Length: 499
Image (cartoon, rainbow, N blue to C red; front, side, top):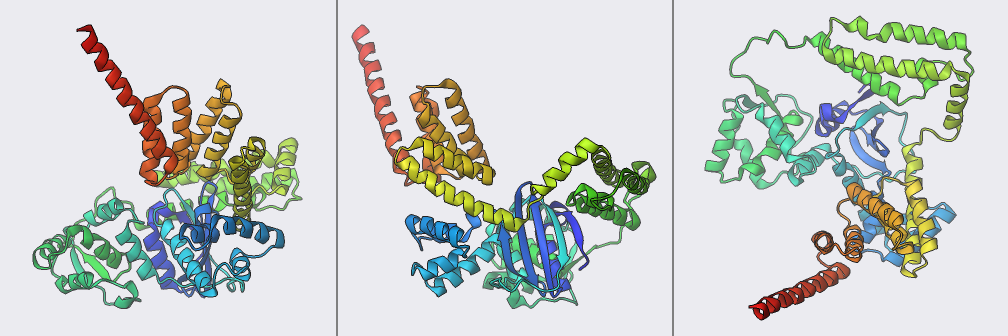
């Protein structure tokens, strides 16, 4: 497949994964980015085989900890060793006798799958696909068949069920038939016996609605279980859709040429966004103002929005985005002071690679564990320093912000401005990661000490919803309930006395 930039929402990750598999490039890479969240997937002959991520919860150590294979103490110690000795965490854990090679192999396999499955739910993500000469030799390759990945993601809700239904709604009155050309075997999907039964209903004459009705009546299969399977087979071109009757093309429907133009302009904009300003204008770092202006006018002439006034709105919008980026690059580089500042930012790592990000999150995680130890000893000053480092290194991890906020509160529980700052950090942490029980517990304690019992109770209940076995929150809830009962008895006692 040719080098390609795009938006994941426009194509959908299932279709993109299928397209990559069909092309079967010998070695290739898919980079995806959503703000500071980045992921890189390596492919061999169209099969995803390895991935790098800067998402903390997808790190190997966190996975082993989550599954109870290693303890918190072993996890923290392995982080220190891997960072000081520049070793991989799996290597450190095996040499320390904490896990077996078999356990590491299974964990890496699970990690590859989880990192892949989690992409299915991403939104507003830009992607860049490109081929490489060969895969890096140090990678542990764990192939995941796209057919299995797409069906599993659809079944398990990694790919939003609402989106599947929305896409299939368009096919209700279309004939569903088997394709004569396919690159898959049915076994590739690891379909269940019930799913395989659905195939017996497809005869090239029934619509999707017909199949839905017959599956429920004849096979006693729940409708909700039909959608993922049919959707996967359509996406992977096992099934094709045909109109009952050929309809006339709508007058306002874009022509194939216009569709291609929009796609090319959108792809070009995303490509340029990934470059620095020198690369945007196609000039070297030593270019003088004359060369900068020449390069600018050449690109401005090609992408000026007025050039696309007879094309669809989407084409003009994409051209306008490119034109704005070109202007920004020109304005920055043609101004001596602005150019110097920009060049300094590039030297300081203005664009970090996902591999460097992955290293940063491990450093951040080490600081986080040190901060938690300091916090348990009530050494709030050391804890605050450690948590501040974690937030600098990985500002998108909600747990880090929540713990920093909690530490700030413990340092100055009577300082209104510091308490406000603490609550804002904890709430920001919850917004980034709503699953963390401790953050709700922290917030509950602060509300309780402020005398806001209803808000405290709601926060503790949230903590218990996230983790039914969090003892601190359960204890707080019992105390609040006891207090309510006592206040209630006192209230009724006063009423009877007055009467």
